[in-house]
Amino acid sequence: MLIKKPADIRPSEITSQSNYCNRRDFLRAGAIAGGSLLGANALGAVVPDARRAKLADVRASEFSTDETPNSYEDITTYNNYYEFGTGKADPFENAQDFEPRPWTITVDGHAEKKGTFDFDDFIKPFDLEERIYRMRCVEAWSMVIPWVGISLAEVVKHFKPTSKAKYVAFETLNDRSRMPGLRRRSLDWPYREGLTIAEATNPLAILAVGLYGEVLPNQNGAPIRLVVPWKYGFKGIKGIVRMRFTERQPDCSWNMAQPREYGFYANVNPDVDHPRWSQARERRIGAGLFASKQPTLMFNGYGEQVAHLYKDLDLRRNY
Image 1 (cartoon, rainbow, N blue to C red):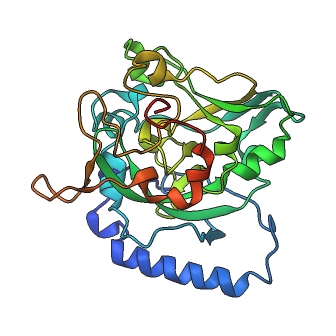
Image 2: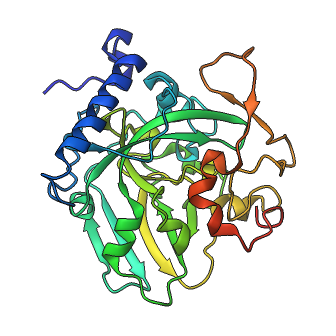
């Protein structure tokens, strides 16, 4: 089988935004029409191991935005993934030879079901959904990304956390031989992130395994990463190898490195500036350097779905 790397792919071979939006409308209509025929988990998630392979049996999600997605090039060449370098282009350039399969994910902590699972077995009980989400980076830029993933809430439910579990902690692969960025002391490796159980079981959170209807590229976190659209991008941990249910708030990489700048909650909040830049406005990637910035939306525009999670918190102190 001939597998083309991104550098070999002509622009004409990349799905256009207009064609993809038409495809999304078709999927959504099909999901509505076929809802009575397919029960939950009727198909189960299947992710091929070939790069840029098409994902089958993907359902359209009711949570998608109607905004136009960024291009495939935007999404896959402008990334934060320090395991492959600190520059925005480094992950695309340095992750091409990374092999994300075979892959295992360890689930441990306060849960009834625990163990180390092969990637295919880990995702198999769940359905693949396409969710087009607004995504916001802490450096005041944003994208709209058509993710394909599985519901994190369903994953949490599947592993049956006990009453002691108040948080879900995640870890990234820590392999210096395969991830050149780990040879630098940019952060205290491995990369770690965490959510409260309430956040992890909110319907918006997913574990992404693809984008634009295809297998997730290496530079975007293959084979599996976290997507929490109401939070800043650094909460979206990539290359997940461990999921742990904890009683205490877990350590998180950026909060450990710069606690004054990066809080545990990391909700998009235009009223709380980063110490080095304003969060009040943002620029859409791909719009050009001279494009006007747009106002930043509280919770990245997902307040209706998530504001209740923080009703008792001072969001200026719990940032």
